[in-house]
Length: 83
Length: 256
Figure 1 (spheres, rainbow over the protein chains, first blue to last red):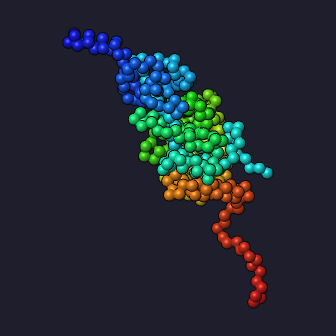
Figure 2 (figure 1 turned 180 degrees about the vertical axis):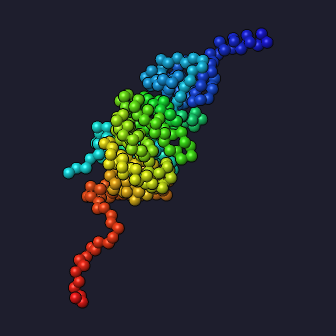
Figure 3 (figure 1 turned 135 degrees about the vertical axis):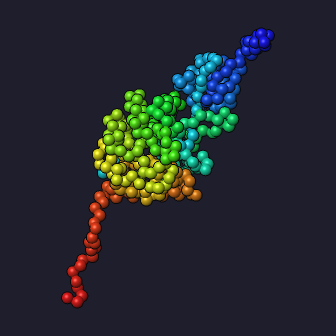
């Protein structure tokens, strides 16, 4: 039991993974430092989307300055047809 | 004399606003927009589907159109405000159609929450057009709160039932200082013409055009309907009468 716990701890440290919520879904992300990294890893086009980070809108030019941490909540939205 | 619609300090060159939902293909939207002659075009914001990120609808909207993002999906004022702020951050301007709905059966808007959102967003500098259930007192309050126009529904969204709310909309047109724009439920160009005949400033149409087998022709038909109705309103429509009034002189010229 104790061993197992330690193992988990060290593993977390080594791989830099953390749990965050994206569009209401919990996800484990690895080696992602900021919003720019995240958008790249999801293969999203920066020009098409808007990001809300913990209920605050983050302008595109600040994406690389927002460091992600455990428990963050993100909304990633884009424009669609609507009346 | 020029007949120009002004909203939010801008001259709007078409009284037919177009919604972009439900079209069978996005590429069609540009053609429909050209046929409709619309200047104001609505879009919506949605969570990105990470498994299949969609192409951008904005690529299909010609330059020169004013984008008005709706707050569909908002169930209360706070959510509508969040959506408006996201829109602004996306660089899509300040035009917002407030749509707050918490009734899933008829999709009728929540006027009280809508008013709250109008209040907040006007103060933040947005050009705010609230979609609302037709109601005079509420429309007055929305105008006082700074709404650039009010948008009462004709009938439930997407129902194609036409202007079922005509009597109240007429009262709103007479009493409200800001433009009254009928939004939702218009099914045929004659419905749009009727709205214009009673003095509405514009109409917003989506479903009736988008689900038509020939959306481009239907857009042109709505454009004509809006234009005909507006011309008739400006010309002055005579009140109806319960009795006949002969169009030809009744003086007898045979027999007497």
